[in-house]
Image (cartoon, rainbow, N blue to C red; front, top):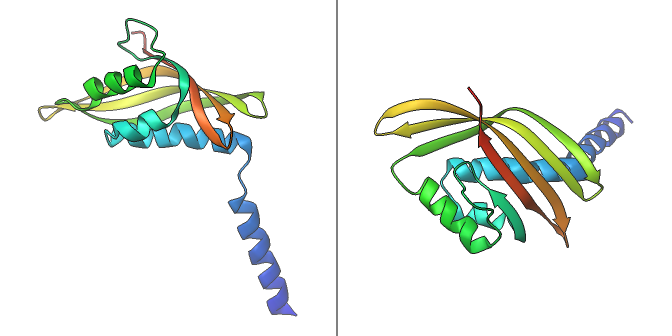
Length: 147
């Protein structure tokens, strides 16, 4: 009987921890984005955006609306001499609908160029929505932290 109770508790724990809700699914997209950004994995970053996503990066001078232009932005930003480690200092998640969330965050980029490292802080907003069976970034904006 004792073994049965332990088995039931273990199964309940495993089932509950394996089931993520929509909010957690949306946040996972943002976490995958940060991991891919740190790895300079342009293909993965671009795959996280919906085909009709709206994008405004830190140095964007226009509103970017095509996957090709999002790719170009990250190729220039990530495949040069600089290396980045991206992390979120603080974040807030707001439900817009059961299938759409706004993730607003303060981020920290550790930027290394020619052996010199500096920390750069910014403000970032992701709108993540479920498209068919996948969660995708549908809107992105990042700006530098004001001094």
